[in-house]
Amino acid sequence: MVWLTQIVFWIPMVTAVVLLLVLLRIELLKGGIPFGLLRKSIVIMLGLYILQIFFRMLLFYLELKKSPIGVYLLPGKGTTFFTEKLWMISEPLFLGILIGLFFIFIILLVKKYVNRPLFEENDPWIIFLVTFIVGYPNIYVLLIGSLLIMVIFKILQMVLSGRQVSERLQLVPFFLLTGVLILVLSNFSFYSAIYNLII
Image 1: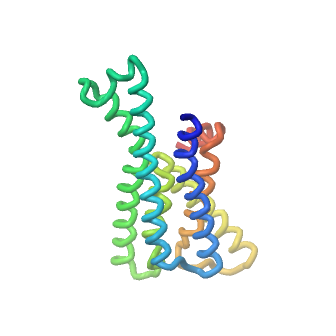
Image 2: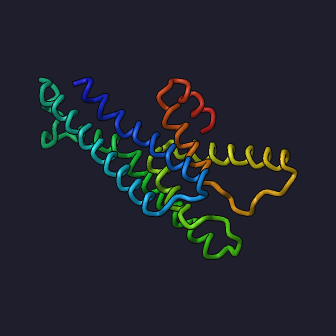
């Protein structure tokens, strides 16, 4: 059962890292990610995360059913233990989707009322993808980390080239890179210490 739990945990994680790296490569080499590929990426990752939640809850249900005490914590036994566990597992994805949609709304508002070309056409959807992949509360690290890396890069670019940087924010490469770093580093114990320092 342990090996099955590990597979359920790692498949979406590894897929997300590979996918974000592929999208980052396309963004850097071609200067933009085709919307068709982006749409497929969103569907694949949403599907994988929903399946992960389903299988995690199924494995949890089977474990409770095998336990002499656990059977009293199953749904319909007068306790909210199982539904609380379901919320705990699905909360990062659910809140990540909500916050991602909020970001889309904000970016679309900015694009509508600000005349300068701050964002590319597909930027809102790429930001949405990365936001729900890292989930809540990693979104805080995603925002702070992306902006920090972008500012450092822009300063170095300006100093080394001696030219003004582009008007566009070009958040996408930094969002993708920070998303990969979060997914990889969150598996190490020191990430929690860094997270607590930032937040």
